[in-house]
Length: 177
Image 1: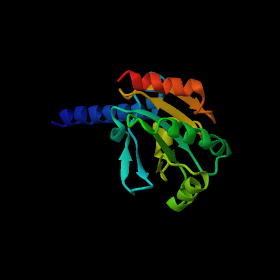
Image 2: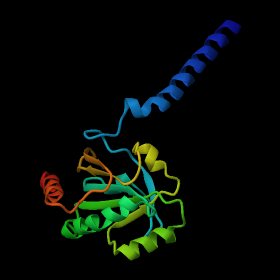
Image 3: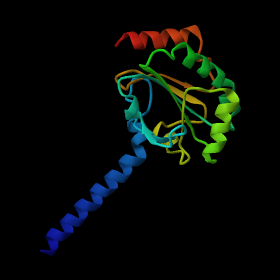
């Protein structure tokens, strides 16, 4: 009987060690890159106070921007994201989901939104878990996600999202229906 319990204990230890190793190696095994499925996340919608996840945008083309109010390149990039939003505001199948990783109170992010005249959806992840989930290396980092939930573009750093190249990309993704 003792021998059976020893075998069970060894199996449990091996499985636990495998699970721990799998979690630690997840970024290497399942990198978040172009072609991969966009990972699920949760953040607070600053307009409603609701917890929102990527599943709320299923079937839509999404520009997911991870940023912070204290980030100078993010400040440079925001006006172009707003212009892109306005260019496609009539199309309900395109969403800009901007996730602030500010640990400050939501009022800080809301004030930034007002100061910059941002009309697209802003979420906040004060825990900053989205950084781990999306394996970011800093802010801003932006992912374009197609209707099937696949990442089709990933950019690190500030970018002109209202450029004709990016608008053409969004049009092509929307046309795929």
